[in-house]
Length: 310
Length: 310
Image (tube, rainbow over all chains, first blue to last red; front, side):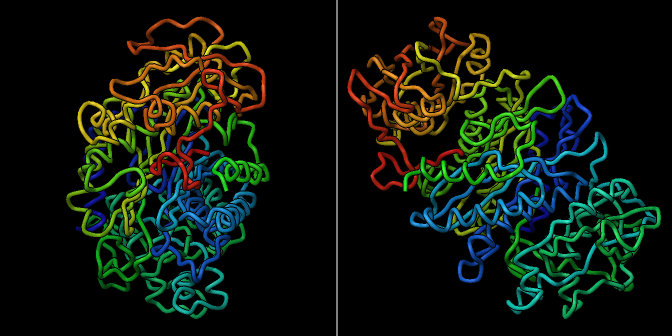
């Protein structure tokens, strides 16, 4: 069973629950969007970071894990054009890790929290056989301005921030700038805020790889996409790593207007065009592009180490 | 290292993060309290439900696990006097469980969601060696009316809803009404709402056992407590189970005014008095009461199966 099918099924089941009018966006986007009786909307996201899937104790320090656990959720806020407000951190560790590993995890997480202006507001603490962190982030965005995945229109251009493939390259080599980039991803918060003013018609973050994530964006928007082939490859990265490697945490977005070469200091590259067609169909240089990026429940996935937001 | 020490340490570290003025209550209560520019405050909580700690695949169906995973977080909303709004569900399961186990988990969770008027708004999905669920709940409460742990004053009476020890009894026997109660805890949402009008001076839910949870409430309020010994024991439960057994999910609260015998149809019993004294000191029939209830990181704990909210 493919992850997309599982999520479609959960989404159908979720239709049976009450739908408060304040819940603007539910399952299917980077974040849920909630509208209090106020000028700002609140967005919410949660992301697992699991030992053996997203990191290994041998290669990642406790500080690294804490940093990445928060960065992954912050990247979802960036994709909504939201500013960070607070997070809740659920952490389960094997007995014995609580004295040294646990405080270092929090130091890593809190260094990312400070850098992004986010408060640690609570969470849960438990023991388990393997380390599991689940980080919930709340962000704020002016009323009605959250960047969703579902707004891409035929004729829109497709853009990405930064470069692609460095995290996959880092994971393959475990050294150099690419490995550092894998350990210390930079959530694109400032470019995300800038996207609200362009405005982007749709946006998401690249967590599972361009081929799968672009398919998801197109499915939500009910459109197809053509990639021209001009991808901003990270130094040393292969085309495969740029197309299917995950955890780059760059922003993927669409816009009808022309977009500048840089947003908040980060390079932006036009990589293709949205068109009419079967929802989710993507071509690369004219040939259908298979989503070979990460699918948590299919063993032939290109990578095995990520999850997928509902 | 005791859990209380670990949490105190995390709390100290968290002081280094920004503290937005909208964050009214952070680490140390059942929920974080957030104040949008609106008439209502929002409260947030997150709770792990972990295979081998909180449940066993042999004794708990997927439906049971989904039901309890949400009930545990809802109980925290009840303890704040909040009404449920939406939840985010993070679920990691071993490959192979996604076709049958996973939809049944969601059916259990959504039956609880429907019963409590709560929407499923998103979450995360991943694979892992053992099942891990983390459920984040958002609730709403009129501005400034959230019931915190820190308001108990010397002279206040101490109360509990319902009866104590049934979940521990059920866990010991795995049969009868007590076992059903263990599998299907009822978050005290309606009594929680009623507590806002009394008003309760402090409130929390009994998740880890009266002896430990009352100590926590007293620590947050900077007071001590005397239990008279008149505990509302569940049918068949021992005094030990009522004092130290966890997962009853009843409400523990304090009030300066006299409280009626029932709140929203649920019996209420006066069990003691708040007094001046060392913060967190509790006596039972005049003798110091050790918090023998669950501590996740001390092996001599009475139970091994629960966690603790920050």
